[in-house]
Image (cartoon, rainbow, N blue to C red; front, side):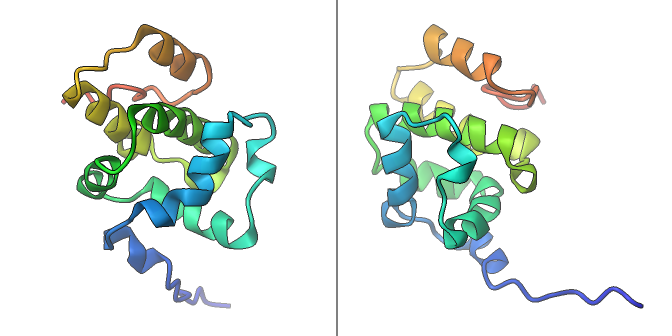
Length: 135
């Protein structure tokens, strides 16, 4: 049998603009702090959206983060740290939204945040979090 490439309509969204509305369900989970068993809290649609969100361009994250409060950004950074760690299709390495969210906090003068940094590092195996690539 030969490998046939499947069309994935959500893959096209990686280049599309994301909005707060696109993230609302994830924001609610993150803000509630319900991180235990986070991988089991998603609908089937959300499970297909997560890998796309994890690989969405940093400029798109910078745009959508402007609509978020700093508390929401901190919660989302924790949320995406766990998503990447617990869901194999969501590995993003140096393209993780956690990096872009922390950069938005830095722009606001709220990062580095020792508590958030310590939490991220203790909950990930991604060596790029939370600062990104050194190059």
